[in-house]
Length: 276
Image 1 (cartoon, helix red, strand yellow):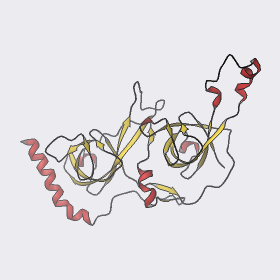
Image 2 (image 1 turned 120 degrees about the horizontal axis):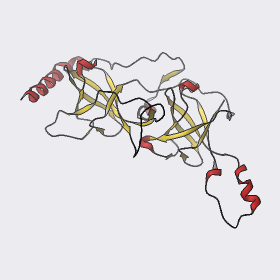
Image 3 (image 1 turned 180 degrees about the vertical axis):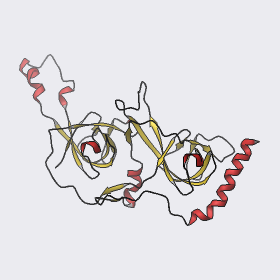
Image 4 (image 1 turned 90 degrees about the vertical axis):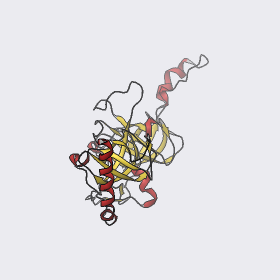
């Protein structure tokens, strides 16, 4: 009975808040970087749904369920989402939050500085009503289904570079690597997103371009038919250019890039060289 009353109280708050929310703009941070502008409509959702890496533990505010008569393990548009925390966690009507989850593979450690973990964005929500310990929200956009125990992070609109990055020469002195795509995907093609192990602390900015190279020397290429000279010199084969990528999201020690041109799929472990 106590749980029923608590749920009814939250639902009551929803109805009392609807009229005020209809005229209320979403509470999102305002960009102050003159080099960035908000992403256009045709690119907005792609960047907002893009994967990333994190070395931080998941935020404590979680998706708990929905205001439904049954337990739903996956939520989406049309569901009234219930999240933990409420007013005690600083939640207020009108706020928007990304809904995200950590993607762990077998034996995965972290997240910590030595073990970054892939972050999947399920969508974003807007808070409708707040109780002391829980809040209700509507699904603004679903990149895919929102799951129970997904966590919330403050929403900020996706940004793109205000102007094209200059330069045409790749810089080979400090090459990085491709990490992983959404849900630890190991290879992606044109238009898809994947991570790199360079971020803001290395000077990476949104709108920056990188060339992707592959080292074929590590690939198995052995046969008793090959001469001794061939086997001795195969390690001198140069890197092969695979693709060009564009930075769309930057974190301190990693970034998310979109493949803009490719002659083959971009794979985890490929090298990257900044274009200047």
